[in-house]
Amino acid sequence: MPSAVQEAAIEEQTGPAEPRPTSRTLRYLTLAVTALLLLGVGWTAATLTTGRTPGETSAEAGFARDMSRHHAQAVEMAMVAYAKGQDPAIRQLGYDIALTQQAQIGHMQRWLQEWNLLPTGSRPAMEWMPDGVGVDASGLMPGMATREEITQLHEAQGAEVDQLVIRLMIKHHLGGIHMVDGVLKVSDRPEVVRMAEAMKAAQQKEINELRKLQQAGG
Amino acid sequence: MSISTPGGPQRRPTVVSTGKKPAAGRPAAGAKAASDKPATPQRSGGGGKGPRKPIAPVKVSQGRSWGPIALFVAVGVLATSIIGYGAWAAIKGSQSWQDKAADIQGIVNFRQTDPESISNQEHRAGKQEYKQSPPVGGPHNNTWQRCLGDVYDAPIANEHALHSLEHGAVWLTYRPDLPAADVEKLASVIRGNDFMLMSPYEGLDSAVSIQAWGYQLKVDSADDPRIKEFATVLAQNASMEPGVPCSSGNYTTGTGTEPRELQPSMGG
Image (cartoon, rainbow over all chains, first blue to last red; front, side, top):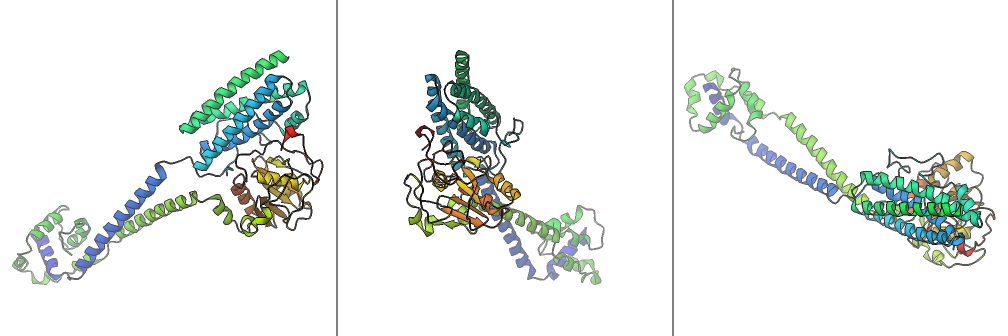
């Protein structure tokens, strides 16, 4: 033990004087740089986490984009119902569905703008809902009518319009509710939850109405 | 280097290298003792072991401790890249669609270069003359062409498609003699996407031309990644009437490039 003390003492004497301040400065510098970097990491983490909005591949973004497209087809069908429906109840329902869903498209597009996302996603449709019914072979989301069915609706006349509207819209709404359930399962964004719940309630109510009209019309 | 500075443990090798075999914990204790007694250097003389004096381990102690340095560098690089990514993400995330569009190489922005040629948004019946081919702005028919990701396999009228562009659609046109495989590649960009439509176009001066209101990009290959980039960035964003639909309108190709108006209830 005394020898260790001696060694230290020797070192004190013989150790060159210059390296001492340089290495001390280096050490302080390193500490300062480390502190600065830590601050930077903290700032980055803070900006990336606080007030974080749904990202490009989030369920919310997928829902907003896919439901916009889903709604767009409902609007087209509802406008035919409004323009050509035989039963005034069908025309009234068409008016209601078209305006409501077009407005909801506007809401969902506004979310995407606020989240700094493009209206068009980089991921395939329905990917955000992995355990849901995906798109079919022709890329249609749950409940959507084929192009041929839409054309058939456009070309229909008389009572056939009402029957087609009822059949296609019930199927469309059921698919829509399936997607709403998908986003409600995973999202806690207040604006998304509120809108999704409203969509579900309205479409469920409209399905009941359409079924009543279906029974009345035979 | 003073022993009393922080980082004592790094210095341990110095002490260990004296050749003595102190217990592991000892050197530190000894070192502390030494720092307390800088005023008694005579003790070294007291030892009487002259030849031991020039022992060199001091040199060893001055060698860089590469371990900690490497660690600091690694941490530094990691931290810098995290910060860099954060900054990049923040800037990229807040980039407007106009900036994203400007970043697409070869894109022509007529809103800047020739705003007058596209300023007229009037509804006019019948055939119209356009400065650009395919048109990217100007008067058009009352009826738009449906643009819910519609892939038309025959030519459509400029006067309808242009109305779709006004609504925010991106219109992908290709030379009719393009191989079927190429046409399918293009269709995969458009199909199923709102505010997009596609059709063959006679007399096109490039293999593919994609346009939005006031914007156009002409490329020579269906594989060009800029096609999808253009479609993704400009669809809906380039709308002159934000919020208007792509649904309904004219959904057939029956009349070729000859425009035709629909029943009032069907579009307009």
